[in-house]
Amino acid sequence: MSTAFLLAVVAMILLAVPYLVRVAAGPTVFDRVVALNGVGTKVPALVLLVGLLYDRVDMFVDIALSLFLLNLVLTLLLARYVREKGSAT
Amino acid sequence: MTVLDGVVLLLLVGGLFFQGVAALGLVRFPDVFSRLHVTGVLDTLGMPLVLLAVAIHLGPTLASGKLLLVIALLYLTSPLVGHLLSRAALESGMKPWSGGGSDP
Image (cartoon, rainbow over all chains, first blue to last red; front, side, top):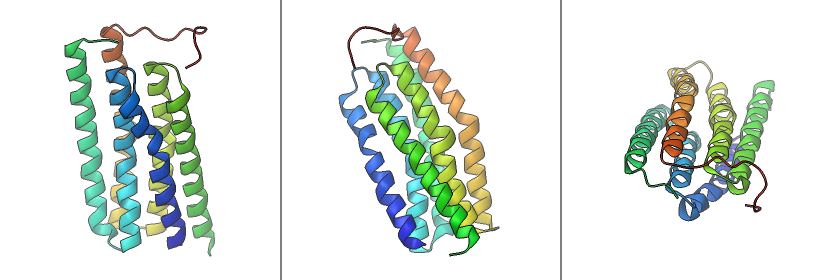
């Protein structure tokens, strides 16, 4: 069963690459924020699967919860920031 | 390989499938609003299925309860983030893509 979780970790990291490409090459700043939010949504599940591989899930669940909340706050603040800048295109 | 393991594997594969769909859409879609729309697929199906697989694998413990809390928070905050980002993009002068034009 742990090989399945290991394969899931590898697949999730590979599926995060298009998001990073979009962060690097997004035409507007909003594309970058959207892609960064996508990566940040993936991170808690990734941390959780790694914790499952290490048999320390009790600790890693708390880390995943706090990372999720940090990603939420980051995205909300970035949304307000880029809106106040008002710099489209 | 019990029935529960089969359920966990099925949920993992389903979550990875929807993550692949979201990554494909993020690369191929033409403008900010459609990319935001496809990120919603990741928020509502990609991540919760993986988290639910881990929760089922753990069984009835405190950790799986916290995982269900993460899933509930994800469902509550995903529309909030999408609304704020799309409103920020719209008020900053982004025009929604309306067909035709160049291939992205």
